[in-house]
Length: 203
Image 1 (cartoon, rainbow, N blue to C red):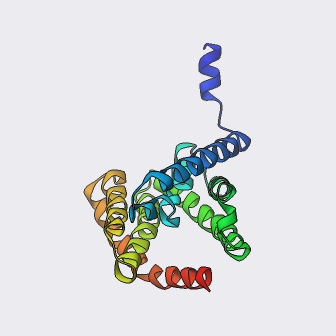
Image 2 (image 1 turned 90 degrees about the vertical axis):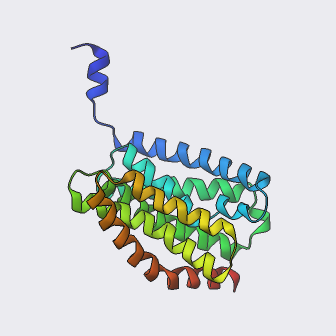
């Protein structure tokens, strides 16, 4: 066995996963800020929507094959790095209360989305479907909230992302159907959570 093959077989350590999470968070934060400056209204919403940001920890945890508590830690690290980068490039426009709220949500949402990425990458159909449902449910819930209470085509665009995640991530049609049903239930339940978040941020 060659030395190159030996390196490829080595398991990815937690430190390496965290470095990937930090790097991905910084790059995504920079990209989000850039998109926010160039996208026309109302599409700027998609550059700083919390649910779509959750795709970062979901993807990082899935690609690095982080499992369990490591997926939670990797997910939280990735989203905190994203939010910190975003805030550093425009913190003067936000109150200290909003920044603290963002930090708290980044830790909790990053952990949840990281765990969802872990589950979605597993072979067992139950965990795979649940992981897809959690991530897509977060996106569809925010899209539903925005479409009902705010309005605008951008929310339909976000909803399409949630649906594409299920259609593209599901391995078989039963996986997609079950995940979509669970995601719809979760989206309806999250309506109140998004309402509370916006009320606190605006209060």
